[in-house]
Length: 315
Ligand code: HEC
Image (tube, rainbow, N blue to C red):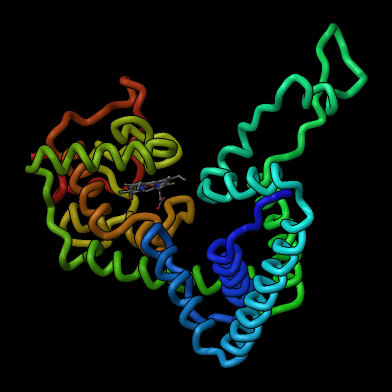
């Protein structure tokens, strides 16, 4: 005769399942937060919504009463069965009962039977002398399996027929949240043209600007800005001259794009780069234009385009 699963195990587990089921079918109007902390926060929000529902407490109360009744019935059945055992079996049953529940559960996973017991459960097919025992599955495994089946049914029902999931809506809400985060980030990291400062004297900034330039600009302006699809950025000729100072002119074109050629897109307006990043890139472009030798056609650079800008000539 098998030992009964103690009430302190199956009652909390069932109540947990009830809470879980309610968590799934209760609509929640919060925007999910990302990350581990967000996960905890989302779970607590869900639970809060569950716990404020009258129907939840009603179902929980009924469940508790039913579980107590089941427990009482189990006790009666156990006592009845016990009476019918032989004295030897009764002694063994009592002995087994002294082992803690978890130890027994764990033991059932690594149970080993005697040779005689093995003979009874050996299957009569075999291959290369290897035979198979028709072992019973361990209780913990079966419990997990049954739990999985019940969970699956509740989940599919909740997903299909209740307010549990609206992936489209959730996606949109998450995007709104992300956009809000982005604009907070942008305000903290952005500067507009009036705030942009030429930092071409700062080697660290120029280096960072070069990295950004290599990521975003070299496919058109080539290594070192010698020009290709986009004009040579190291010479004194400029197609666009919309600002008084060279640095501001570069910043302007990168932020707002070229009004003449859409290939030079508005990196700032399109939020591909923050104002702070453009400041670094513009510092780098200013640096290669003013402090490095002009790259010539003979060196494989692009021919000058636009107007010769005397005021911006390399000093
Ligand atoms: C898809 C190709 C492309 C990319 C990528 C690109 N550019 Fe341009 N860029 C151009 C073209 C084409 C022009 C010429 C625009 C015109 O004729 O008005 C230009 C013009 C410019 C100008 C003004 C040059 C002048 O003579 O007026 C600057 C400065 C500039 N780009 C910097 C950059 C920087 C910095 C990046 C990277 C953030 C970048 N570009 C990325 C194609 C590109």
